[in-house]
Structures are given as C-alpha cells and as structure tokens.
Amino acid sequence: MLNSFMGGGKYSTYEQVVGEWIDGKPIYQKVVESVVPTVTATGEADTNVDLSSLNIDLLLYCQGSSKTVQTVPLSTYFVPASEEKYTQCFYNTSNKNLYIRNSRFTTDNGKTVYVILIYTKTTDQPSN
Image (cartoon, rainbow, N blue to C red; front, side, top):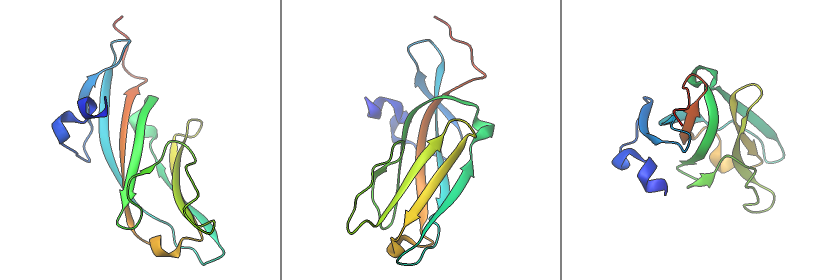
C-alpha cells in the first residue's frame, strides 16, 4: 500500500500530490527535515516543527530516520530502544506541530532527521 503513495519513489521537500483518498481528496507527500535536540545522558528535550501551513486534515503516514536511528515510526510513541534511551516523533493535532523528542539518547544529538509525511488537507473538498 505504501509504495503506491510514494510517488514512484520520488521524495521531495516540496509538497506533491501522490494519490487520492477514499473520499476523493488528493493525498499529499512531503519530506520535512529537522534536527534531533541535544540532551545529556539523563535529560530529555523536544524540537518542534510547525506544520500549520500544510493544513493537514488527516495524517495517513509519518515516518523518518536519522543516520543513527533508522526508520522509526513517528506517528505514535514507538519507544524502547535500550536502557530507556530513545528518539521519537509525534504529531500534535491541536497545535499542528511535529515534535522530535530525544530522551537520554546522546548518540542522536544534533543529527539531521528526515520525516516523510503523507496527508490530506483541510483546504480540499471531498469529491465523493
């Protein structure tokens, strides 16, 4: 299913239409780039990315990776790596922010993380 969304495997930091949702709305894909926050061995920190300009209605897919943490599911808390150290992401539907949380995982400090988003928009009308 996911491969059909991926626009033929073409990833971009520009928003692109990659399909149609069950209600007839276009499905969009965009890659967002950010940085994992720096923490100590006992600390926790968040970096947030404002996604309000995307007008996300339904987030269908959200996954990303850094050079250290490969392919971490991001739309839910998918945590335990080892010894309670982890990097995770989650999307807040209220304030429209994507949060990248680093908890005691110093190996990821300052690493670039790429997040693939697939979504429908509030600005599009259903056609069904």
